[in-house]
Image (cartoon, rainbow, N blue to C red; front, side, top):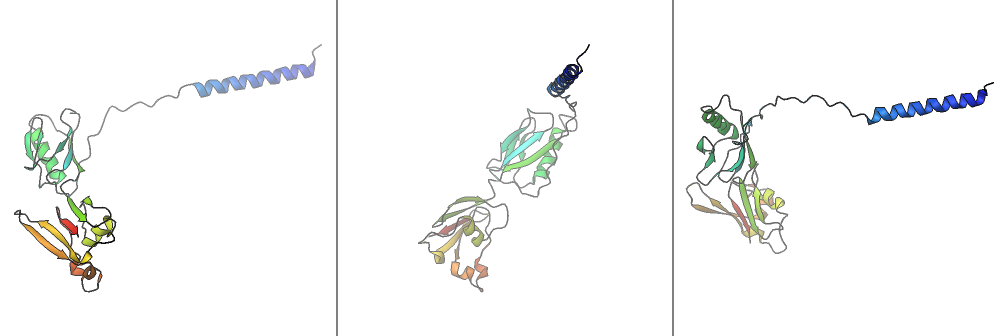
Length: 208
């Protein structure tokens, strides 16, 4: 005669063991990987209106042509050098304009080249601030910036700064230099906003 309690206990234990084993098998099985797409879209073109300048660092990418894709520096003569196309004028163009030019040149060597141009480092668009400020140095000029903006960026005056004797050294297009006196007291006064000069590329703000 079968002992009912012992039989029921045995059946319950067997059921629990089966469930645990099934769960372990389910969780340990590797998940099925989705099929990888073999179609890669070409890089999106840059529509930036930034004007490329000398010393800027550009990333030139040619779709499916890694030997043609590289980082290039705009040389002092305003040109860059790339395989197949050779010397190309870059300074004075936007990334989109340079991209179109490179596409036109590469079209002679390959079918429908996909080219993108991205400015990696805007070394040409900079200004300097030196003298009695907390953080003198060279800063990017990627947006409009006044004297007060520059002072804030540099952490403000040091204790013995002569704010009334500040000046801007500016290099003109013809290479000549211009000294522009600036008075801090006039800048912060109601009538002296004309002294809050907007800085230009390659300007140096000097705080004695």
